[in-house]
Length: 113
Length: 113
Image (tube, rainbow over all chains, first blue to last red; front, side):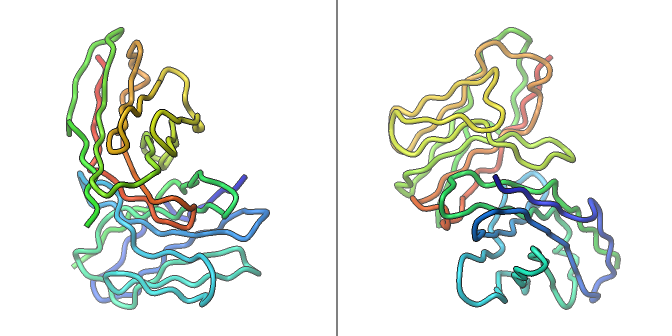
């Protein structure tokens, strides 16, 4: 079974500052990893995913994440925060032999002007 | 773009009622999912369907059932609603294969009084 831990339930950043959201996973087989974003009163929207190949993955809205097998991590970053980045972010893991997507508890990002 | 439509954004029901939550997707996806989302717990899988009339229990199926009579429609049923089922319910769909991202509806916020 896979699981995900997101470090920090709330992150506050200044506009223009780096956004760093931490995700560590547990999986006994090669993982597939996803980051989703949820804006208020909306469903989840895919930001990016890692399945195989290049470990640095670029997504929408200027976000990227790096798969580090040795650290079992898949941290999400954005160089310069924008007010529109205020949302809740979820990391999720599955694998090729599983249909279930296991989600982290989520990290809420607030952006200060 | 994939469109996953949930029939109600907000729903208020009474304890003991039978409640139906409907979800329709327009991209001919094989897989459909029902999750509940609670603060601090992320998303938890209730049921999953990989084909018409096929279903599998997720992590928290107790008190729920599902129906998938047509490929595009996946219904969640609360047989006898209880107050601890007050939550946000999210429907998702995806193509076959665990590397495929899930596409989410906007959610139904259900209150059981």
